Image 1: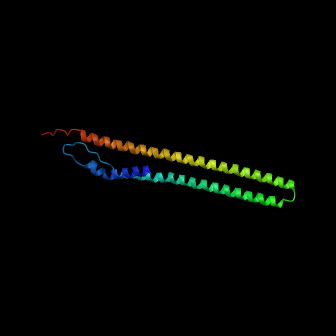
Image 2: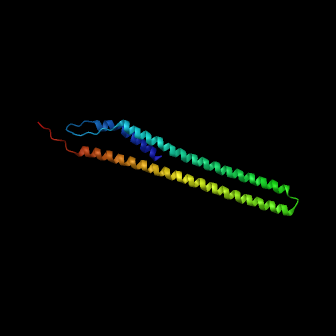
Image 3: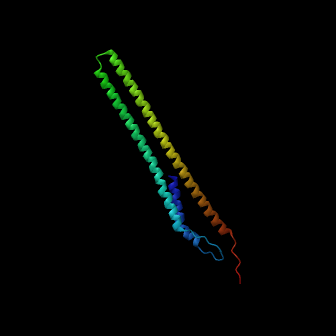
Length: 167
């Protein structure tokens, strides 16, 4: 996943930050120090919140599969019950017709219920995925913004002429 790669890159940048930002260049007035504790705390927070969304999406998928499996089992049970009921009532044509009609109604209702459950599970899963995409996008934008700020600051420091030394 791209976000994990970006997080690793951010971590490497933080580990090397002390070397980049604490190097003293003769005649260079300002220097920038990266607060490693704050940086790694933010990184830890990003990592700890990302798996929660991923876990939620996985749970939604498992729940959807469970619901579909239960709907199929219920349909099979209804079919079996309808068949048994139809076999018991074979003695009369009218009773058979009623049993077949009832079995069809039960099948239709089971199909409708199964479709409704599946649609609801898919809608819920889509909502979780959309929130996850939004969250990952915000994290990515924050990382890009931080990276650009660090590059701009580094470039600015390198292009500034050294101050004149007073004698």
